[in-house]
Amino acid sequence: MKAIETDKAPKAVGAYSQAIEANQFLFVSGQLPLDPLTMQASTDIKIQTRQALDNILAIVHASGLKKHDIVRCGVFMTDLSQFAEMNAVYAEFFGNHKPARAAVQVSRLPKDVMIEIDAIAVRS
Image (cartoon, rainbow, N blue to C red; front, side, top):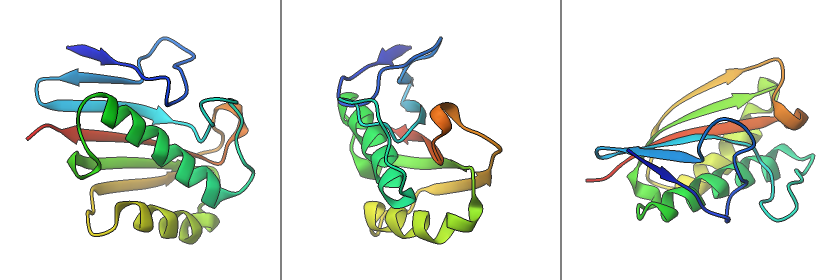
């Protein structure tokens, strides 16, 4: 196993790694929509979604993998009434590549953000 870290995504602020590579799999921890330089989040769900996905991609790239290597995402939202807005950004981000996905509503997320996304990528 190998921990993956990059300064192009927010640093882990707890007892976890940005990602762990095990065998051919990369397990990316849930990414908050924080700008890695300012550690601040927008108040817009579309911007938050894009930032969380950009943070995931930075970690995926740090492991030597690419966007098309992402095979699954988990989306955690505090308000599923904003699902359509999130989904539009998510669909644009992935284009024709469509990883498996789960999306659930949660009561609260760290730093009171609206979304957190995790991912699994595989080295082929």
